[in-house]
Image 1 (tube, one colour):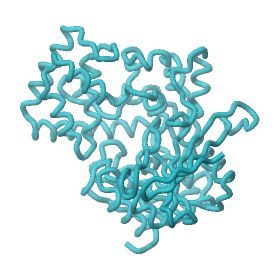
Image 2: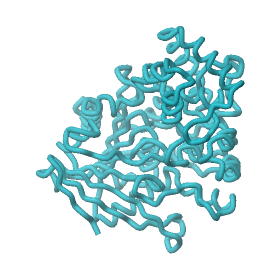
Image 3: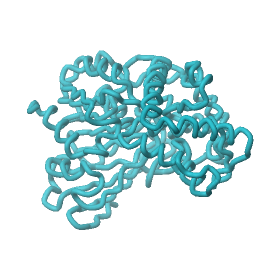
Image 4: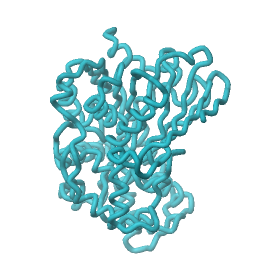
Length: 412
């Protein structure tokens, strides 16, 4: 049963849907998927825009009041009601956790149902329950991967598809993806140390300290040099270099340093899906076999001051306490031959109006592959821009969304 709340400038309606864990077995186990409907008080009959969050493993934003948080919401509510989906396993949807009581084989079998294809099947289930004929989707980062699968699997359900930093490659092997992102990260490291040259010595000294001293994070995990280097994940964001620099300028012996490092770690936190399913998000008919580990360039082994990016490594399932219960399942998933996510032939026949913001220097979703995918879709109007980084929708949401809507409707 839906529950509605009124806050200044917004009407919020909370929905919970019972969907199959495996849409191929609709009479089997059910999980909850939560969605929050957000509307202007005068716009409760507007068409739906489904917001698909980045990740995997991240819940939808929690709105305050228009035009508050998130920043793009005020622009969206001029044209739509927004349905903010807590993708399966996140937020108020049935959580994943570490799946206690399951064998590694059972854990892996369960986790196979949390990719973009299952999320789209959830959206279609919800659309049917709400009685909506067609709706629009807005995909941020991994949410764009979901939106592209939507265009492959159920384009008849879509009025428009909007992408921001999330046009994935079609048919490419994950190895190609990670070679490209490593090349981008090498350039990001060069930029960072040009801006903050003294930080290279700081990082070198910190690495030596962590090798010789058992430094524990507040949660109890040891901070190792390779784990420290994962802080480079922030370098793809508009404020990432400053965030990293301000962290590194702290006294490494201080509790504040250890607290801030733990908070900044990209793969620690509330949801293991980000690590467990990450490479599989790119597995368009392939097994990943720890792709990022296998194709890591020699430069990252030779230079301990180089930060890595959004790369998952098998050692994480030994060093991250919240991932160790899924270590064997992670191995099984890395060996799994994943089914195709995207249908190139169907995308070539797409009639759904589409628009995509492709960020010229995107450190997470490679620009060249995004442009390649954009060329597949005849109805897609691409906006290639260097004004924003991967977090453009968060940094300048009203501007980015306005541009996408205009392009999808042929006004730009």
